[in-house]
Amino acid sequence: MSKGLPTPEIVRRHVEDFFHRSAPVMTLRWPATTTEKLWELPDGVNILGTPPERFGFHLQRVGRDVYAIRVLWNHTCLSWEKLSRMQLLSSALASLLRALGIDLWWLLEQSMGGYQTISRAA
Image (tube, rainbow, N blue to C red; front, side, top):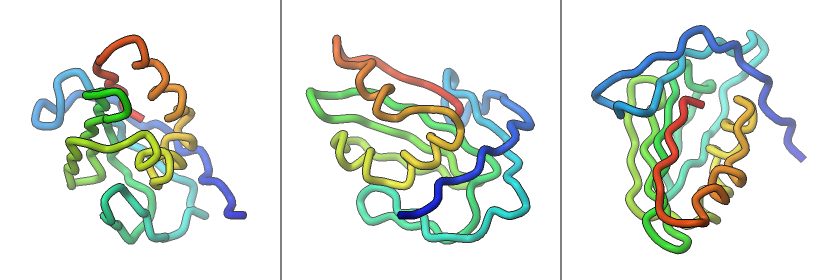
């Protein structure tokens, strides 16, 4: 069983218009003991490195079990139009959000009543 990520310090929370007007971006400081790893994201996208120092996400439900998500990871902006709940929960995004005190399962459940947008900065 792999050890979870340590909790980072949130240095700054701000909005970057190029990313999303309602999704704040966070500047994070991870403990010095945080090591490099392979981050397995949806659709076979992988990032090798330490956890992001700049992170934000915008999640939107677009169908019964279909979500669109936009992620800011340092200087890279990633976007997926149609992901299932399972694809999101089995990706490294779940553990990263957990380290930031955000329960991805809970966020996905919040949109059960209808299609809505969930914007958070980690």
